[in-house]
Length: 387
Image (cartoon, rainbow, N blue to C red; front, side, top):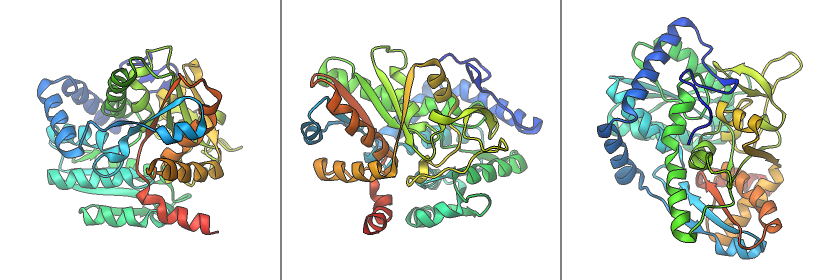
């Protein structure tokens, strides 16, 4: 289930931890606690309990018959992360990390969010466990996702709108890391993407790998074989690394990540350090992270998880881009054919599958990870389509 990773969190040349010494100590302690508890039977039992009783797992692997018939090629299955409590895959990782925070005695939790789904999941679980939460969100994203801001506040979180930079996900991560540097003695940073300094990418993958653990078992039950390809959208990379994890060591399965053409980190990025780790990054002429744009706030990030960078460089995974127009079309096609409104993030994966499926024989099988539901996006899509 792993790419080549060492204990310092490197995947080939990518990963590692490039942070101030005081923060490095905190991260080393976090890594030590994570490795101590991740295989602890009592921790696993509690994590599984909440996944079942609170999140509502396992969620279905739904055969998309009407979409399959419409496209006339490979059989398409949908992994239904949209059916989780809070509406996306984000809660899998939030739950795992909050149980770790609880064991480490943390009283205050901070998080960053782009589309707001990670912020909502963090606020939800903090409410349940009685912890204070502060969520950093780019000011531009608070406007795009105003309903999610209200949800977070309703759940008791303090939402901090970050005006710096573009007011997007990168800027929210900057502020959350600044907070951690200043308050590391009493604060747990619950990072939502498979990015950041070690051990964050490893932790996020570990808790999100439940997605592919389930889908692999489900597809074997339904079809008696592995899929030909698994497709997921990629921004920071958490839903994708979870959807890919249990297939990485299955060479017969293509793993395909799909990113916005205006935030094409894996297609156009170069190796660089961002937010305390090394990965492929979109840089401008001066060598600074380049402004990015996606209609899906959760994919609007100039870097990418280190394991995705490694999977790209090693050739194990394929990464493609789709346009905003293709995403809007896919959003509507899935809604109309299957009665499932996907998040704009997930619609990127659907958009690529719509192009790929008709080119494949009918006996081939595709799994699309529907990372979240589109309730949060319908007003935004309504306004875009009206224009």
